Amino acid sequence: MHQSTGKKNKIIIYLLFLFILSTTSAKFINEQKKLSSSISKINITGLSERKNLEILSNLNNFLYKSIFVISEDEIRKILEKHNIIQEFNVKKIYPSTLNIEIKPTKFIARVSNNSQYLVGANGKLIEDKSNNELLPYIFGEFNSHDFLSFKQNIEKSIFSFSDLKELSFFPSGRWNILTDKDILIKLPQESIVVLLNLSKRFIDNNNFKDYKFIDFRVKNHLVAK
Image 1: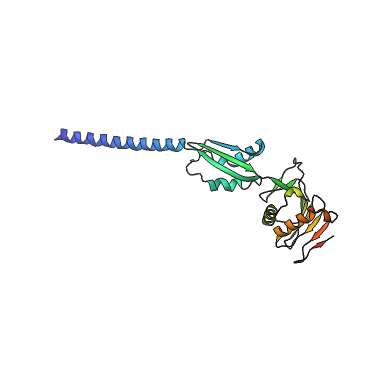
Image 2: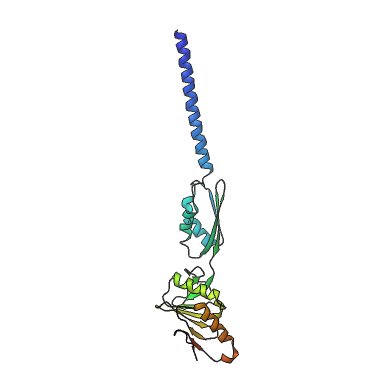
């Protein structure tokens, strides 16, 4: 009887030992999986070496976190703080690498009161002390929405930014432009594309080559001098 009880106790101890061993092994395997899926490398491409390193330092908090739980929205929040970025693409290279390809914005204008600040095609201001591009100057206090809206109108018209020398924004929400031929065009707030096209045809007509001023501010009226 005692012998039978002893055998039962041994079996129970053996089963408990197997249970503990299997549980420990499962935890170890899970920890290994977590470790192997932790981000160990982040590659940034598309900008200057200095700027790539600056952005990489902002993303260091993602290192050693699981690649499966990092979302693109988390990365976007950090990248959007850098005005130079127009677009970006995130690729997860399993098990532990993030590749981030960046497309920089194109500079299309220069701020008049501080030529070190450029306006990107994304409507944001970017400080660049070394840039020597010949770009039109922007006057007035404008925001990204104001600028991007007017930029879209220019892109829809037969004008291009290379045709412009200066842009001036007014509190009323309208713009003036000075062309590369030193012709000042005063625009209203509406029908911008139509009036830009009309202005361009007017400027390109040799019969009006001596005119330096076009004013569309009064609806359905054109004043030219």
